[in-house]
Length: 591
Ligand code: PEP
Ligand code: MG
Image (cartoon, rainbow, N blue to C red):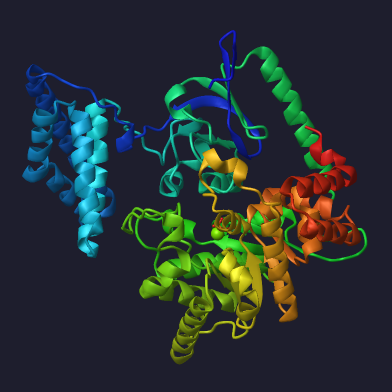
């Protein structure tokens, strides 16, 4: 990288994860990961100078913290400002600072490296202690050391992510959801990250914001510079720095073709999702926040198939209360009534963490304390959410579903808690929908394999293919190095989907797909043919998926699915489905 260069124009290639084209200035978010800090050897004579740098950085960090504390205390009150006391204390911790000095003297390394090493060791030790208070201290150490490191490296970005001065293409090594949540969205033109994949949360967030994004673009954050002018192509996964007039012209044409396709699709907005041979499907939309309800209405979707509630938690500086959650769920349900809104309970963990909830770091977060596993242990958090959802169900058509069900016992426990809170509300005389439907996400192979047992305890299934693929194929959904192995059409995935659909229908319940697979036109004949009743996709994909559904015959889809279930090759399956889709809806591919 870069792969091409001429006349100052440079083109970098990555994975296209959110469609669209934008142009503008680059803003690189600084990366403070400890393993990105270079180690240099120094001499004995250099030691005092390095220690002096540390002292200066401490003074500067203290000055900044006091200034932020002052701002917070005026804006939010003294209570919120006390958290900075803990941060200031870290800066005065003699054990930590002495150990850094000793490390420099003994190992003869640059102070930034020594500081990063020692402070990371401190944070890790604190984190492993099974005590909430200690874990919070670990988070304090991380926050302060990040700021201090930036000061040491001279890269401190006094950036108020919430109020960017002008529109930017944001470039970063990785964008944690807690960071994207902070961003001043109206000034974000697009995202570019070094790591990630189509189903990482940066990608999902970008699609929901309707902005182009390219991920898995190695070294973007170190090779691209602040202020460079670039064009980001979220259709093909390129970023073009210093684009020539010719490039700008070609992209202008591409955008025009796209606009004319969107116009063609607009005719479908108010029409039902029915195949050419008359089979009716439900087409819903995925949302991340209550205000997305407007986009859902405009898209022609028949409700919300997945409301990812994590973002309500990530977007807030403290845990959202039952009341705050109630307002959010109620407003989405009221806006879309009588269409259904399926609210997924909190799916924290994996790549979604919150700054205000200190969760110990894990070796395998996607296999760890995540989603329903977290909620079944953190009962107060779960209780507030379930009560909020139940209360909101009085004001619209709400359904609830649990993420990451891996065994029957988890489902039984979750349902028992839901019953307890129903009972609580009844006693309190608070109204809720007595007939509220409950569903389970099928996103772990164990759940698909035991779907017959799960189906007896729920009213619907929603298949989370993003996770189902990663867990079945043992391919980390975020790791761009193995993205080629992440194969939705792998025969194992299609067989698990079929098993789930058959188990659902045998028990008389419906089954949907809410993972990204449902929004990929090439997958549609397969999913329909495997027996899926509902598809839930991002609001901006609704029209093209509906356009396609209206052009295929269920009989053809069933034939393709039957052949796929006999096939040994994911590539053959994809080819066959692609041939069908291209023949019935060629305009979707004219770019
Ligand atoms: C999925 O796993 O397919 C899914 C819809 O959930 P998420 O992407 O939020 O994990
Ligand atoms: Mg999932």
